[in-house]
Length: 261
Image (cartoon, rainbow, N blue to C red; front, top):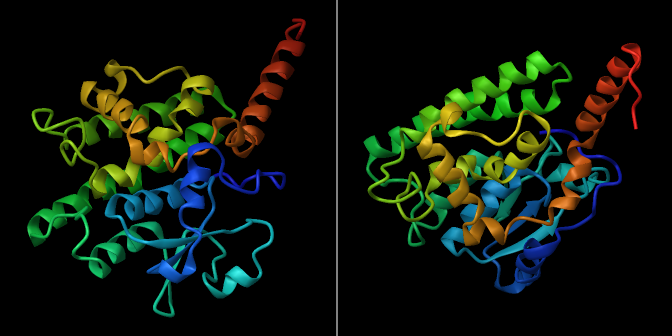
């Protein structure tokens, strides 16, 4: 994801702050969750923890002051979990770990091997096609590059929509989120970046009716809302790219003899 600005807000806000406050008791925690409130990969694991109802201790990691955290994850990236003295990281691995560690809690992946393999194939689409295209679209300063990345992303989102049986509910998991939904949900939360700066809201013509309904349902889901901070604090994370875009457009207009307000 984009590297956050050094002045990034230091902690979760809004509904997410209330969730953090409910998980500051080490004595009753089954594990420690090392987090960065701003990170979509963190939210992916946070959603799993909340959906499964696992008692955890939340620890915020400052992306610019993490020397001690390198002992937990040598890559210096969030999220990570410390469980029974073992340090684990990488969001997909963490979510599968939670399935194995807490088998009596809500299942987010199928138990049958064949069905679990299908879910992994579906999550692979998210990892290899949708998320990379999202970040290319955000980071590109070239309009044609943005359009190409947006099309690539929404073509893959249309494919994602084929995983949903609308007769069972708006999600891949039916009426409730499952592991496949959670794999992509944090980027649905950040859809506003593309809506406002990269070509407008996604349309059914671009990515299919099933995906559009899915995204709206995800954005209003209670667990998603309780792990999402106030939008104003996400803006600086993406601002370097959006600012560059504005400067680029200003330079083009200046060369064309237009006045920039």
